[in-house]
Length: 467
Image 1: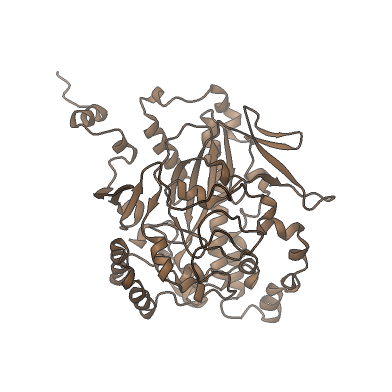
Image 2: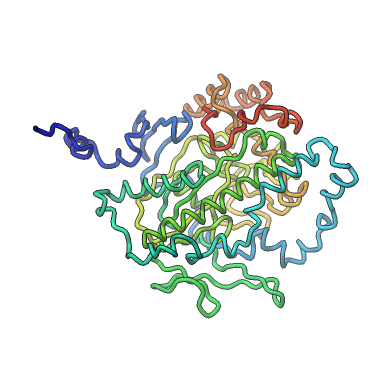
């Protein structure tokens, strides 16, 4: 009997389709038009029905000054400064006990600060607050990967399974989604986004930091220096959607629960994805906020643009995401950076600045530097004030996400219209659309009891109901 079946790859080659199509498994992305810097595409799956410009590899959606921009010290970020900086240790906010005020004095009955809300928040942070040295370890820890000795089999070659590196890259991103990410992208690692040191306080020196340096094949900690081989020149950026209704409760405790849930998922997914890559014989460093700056890495990996609020804006999930990353020497194929009008829209929209209760978001033009020592100068952007942002309300505010027009569900006529105007870059109409957005009720705070009384199946966390 003659075998008339046609193998998929051969069939696609007969049609003249490139292997790039295989990456998305016959992706639903549709090219709308060519642009000077790339192509304009639509993809419900990747971008939530938002028209996005995929840029050429040599194009980036931000401006930076190489004379000013330097690697940032991890010791300077606001999280590290809370440990050693006298200005942070002696601030009045450290004397406040908001939990005591709400749960003891308020008997857990204060709206948006109830015991039920606190229970959800506290549990959501469980894995985020585990020992970071173990979860985000640079080396393979105990587990099935090490027990089976997979990492000792040499580096995996996709050709063993008749796969290309494009398909292998898609497989790594598939694994990221499998482990809990909402979306993932790959970029060539820009060393400027790595911290110049690793904050390592001890009892004798709370400000202790150990330098991070590129090495030939040296990897890890040697003689109080952390080495990252130059061969580890790829970063897998992973994003995690935060619950829409939880964020809508901001500045209530449910917003902090949505945040903590994102941080816990970051820890689980980044660490398991790193072990997946290690099991294929490659080195991997998982990280949440550590190792380097997550937002520019994610921008380089095509996950979005930077907004006025200092947060990555994703075309599908808006600013309602958390970021983690895995740095590796696996030769993955980088994704293209994207643009979809965030900068232009944020120049007109002031909603996040107007609704920031701590005044941490600037309402002026973009600048090349900020006013805080925790700002890293050299990129043209809106520099937020991280100290006042961190200190407000016990670190649970997400007002800037709640009111952002990019945050809204795609199934409303108004939001669809706003996105169409953004596509057309109709700047003169941005103010009108923003006013309509607010007049329609978007951005208003959702009470905690409304959250608890709704059907849990309506909750949006890494689900497709935003379509």
